[in-house]
Length: 372
Image (cartoon, rainbow, N blue to C red; front, side, top):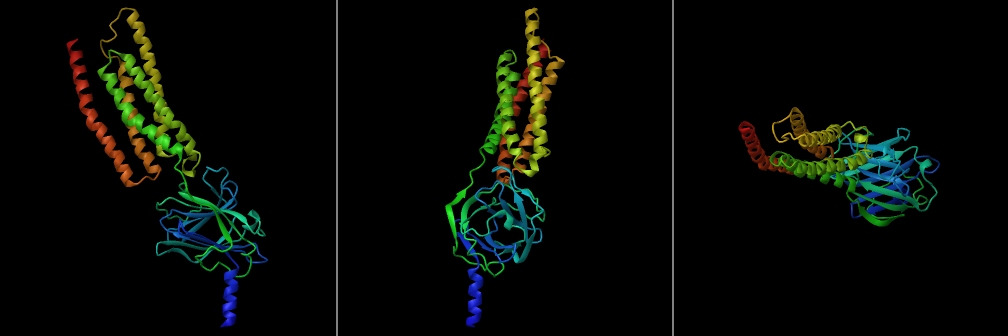
């Protein structure tokens, strides 16, 4: 019995462990002697989309081991590298891993027991204070066997050091422990702030689509005798649409799913802004023609030209495209159903208020044309 206890103590001693109370996460590492393997154990609540550890002080150019549920209830571990602090890490197939039982989802906990066979070249295995990082994904569902599965930005992260000298020894995958031994958390758990670019993209797009665009159409219809007012509102509309596009393009570069600019949200957004800008130039051209006709003494307020009809109906079509695109954007960002329902309510409110006004404008315009 004493021999068994001694052997068990040896197994337990050959590991270094970090216990992170704020995120209820445990990370343990073991380095078998005379081997290139790295054994590791991680446990974290299963409401996180993924959990990850990295060998280095920064995400950039550090080996990241990212674990998330598989489609069968097991675990997928994806070794990845990030080229910049804000880009989604890219899967590296050259890193070999073995996942051991009982890795999987157990009692609302994600458990990872695994061995990395080619990890040691990415850190100093003799370091008594190896810099490490950790992160956990947002509370959204993910079940994938794809090591290149797209991931959302983490919601918590942090840095720590781990004693790899202490972690070197026989023992295989570290025995689960709830104490911090041979590791030190640096600065505590950090809540990842929401991307300012993402926030700006969403807010500016919503204001342009749900406030300025309907107001611009009302101004264009009800105050057509003062086209300068429509010119001002249209300028604001186009400026906001382009202002929403710029951070959207920047965000797209950070994720696998959007780097190719091929999602429905991106395609509709790019086409919509391009057509809107074209209609803006079209409107300027109409204004020049209108001004020239006025100088010739013609009644510029009489009749409805084909140019005007094209400008008006294409503009309305772009607005409908933007409304649909807003919903696609929320879906792409994996917003909650409640959030998407709120967007639907806002769109419905805009139509509920706007339709009677637009109908009244149409009736008055029709009456005026018949009178003329």
